[in-house]
Image (tube, rainbow, N blue to C red; front, side, top):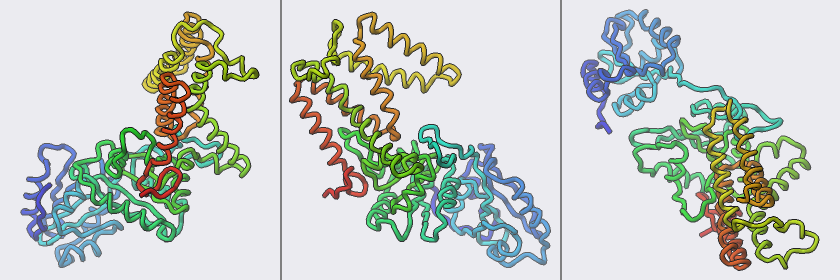
Length: 453
């Protein structure tokens, strides 16, 4: 980082220092513009593409009308009397000057003024606030977070017109200097949790947040590799984030990331979605219960099927039809594991397939893998049916990380059941329960909202 240096009254000295630190000559988008204002030499520094041209033209037009006799004595008076704009600041430290220039603020140096005038008329390239693809709502709002942090805070401020709504801006990363906003309701937030979050963010020592929000999450809480359950809840919906704020939770926004991080969280928060709140109470409860049951089935359906196939005498007569009747060419455990990997392969292929080809290719893949893999003797039809249910049921889970955590638990159950029969199944169930009960989050509580030491 450049050394801290105070801005002097010499414009020439200031521009010489900035041109030495900033690659003005080498970078086409860092622009220095020299002109005369009130009979004094002045220099503008700004980033091309981050400045509102119309606003700057009006500001410059008013500056050109200032005569030499009307020039104020200092930068503060000049900003107050000669700049008809709202967001104007006076900076006396070059470290702050560099930070402002590189984040898009226009900085003005005028000969004789012992300070820099920062004019915040920046604009960032941004997409429209359209509804996120992953977390859709049938009756809710159709807007979603974008990559610009100021737009995201405005979307929440629009929903909560309460003076207690506080949004503090911090910077993380020595090189990236990524903006991080901590949002909370001052009269409802858990003070202990808020202090913990603020202390941890301020104490982060890293060069940059390469992956934005994910990098911040890893810096905030070092997860244990053997517990795949997520520590944070993420949402791309501003209405969900606003509802969490009103519940007393903390929402963290990271610039360049179109989602919000919500703290604290529990297993019930993870399986919630916006549709639960946009319907009548009875319908919302039904949706929650059905989603919870389907989530449980995605973990235990195939391991239970494998367990009963290994112990056919346990199978009640009423469920005798579920037994595998075709000849088993490949052991059931290998069929299940191969299909688990194949489903992920199809998901990755669909993700990277152009949208115009995704539908026909998905149909072809479904026909080939479904029909001909059974006829060829690789897989049994019963195994294909249960794995198809698991693949489709995974999409009822709104949280992507939780879906994969449950998948890893299912694979663990399958392997233990295949190796140790019912003892392995029981041990796997105990491991799953312990993974949930002892999954400590940033708030110091587990998934069941119980305080852990």
